[in-house]
Length: 150
Ligand SMILES: [Cu+2]
Image 1 (cartoon, rainbow, N blue to C red):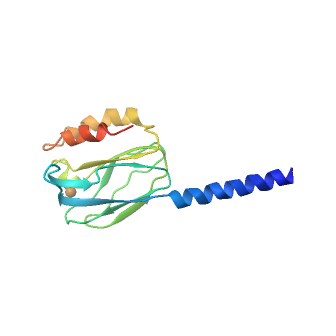
Image 2: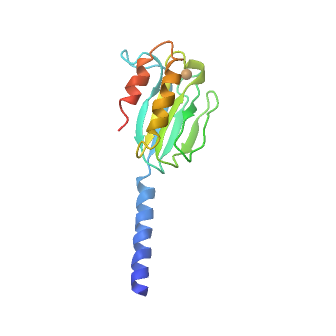
Image 3: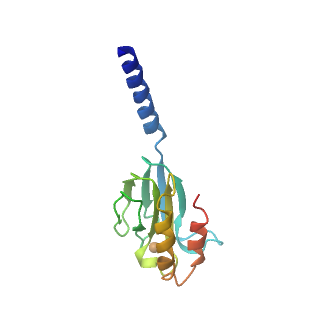
């Protein structure tokens, strides 16, 4: 019995250490222009498949941008970075973050982070069209993000 407890404890420790080792640090650049196909005012990468425990850092690679959540997974808090400041947060729940750059929403500056399973897909399907309707330019970027959810 004691031995079993020890094995369980050791196994748990190994699993926990394993998770820490595999937690990934994602970086998203905020840019005035991307490639010719991408056009101006973009998050790069705009879509990320991540896992709970990973961290996200927004980098003010070009000036005049910030990032703000529009939809977050159930159990996660809404978040917002300051203009031209680096901003890091940890992904703490499964689901999809849909976010945008407030100064450039009209220009189609939006992004998505899927954390594990798409648990809040219904909410995303409901709210994405509202955000899309404010994208005067490049509204098709929203469709491209939605198509990458799996
Ligand atoms: Cu921007």
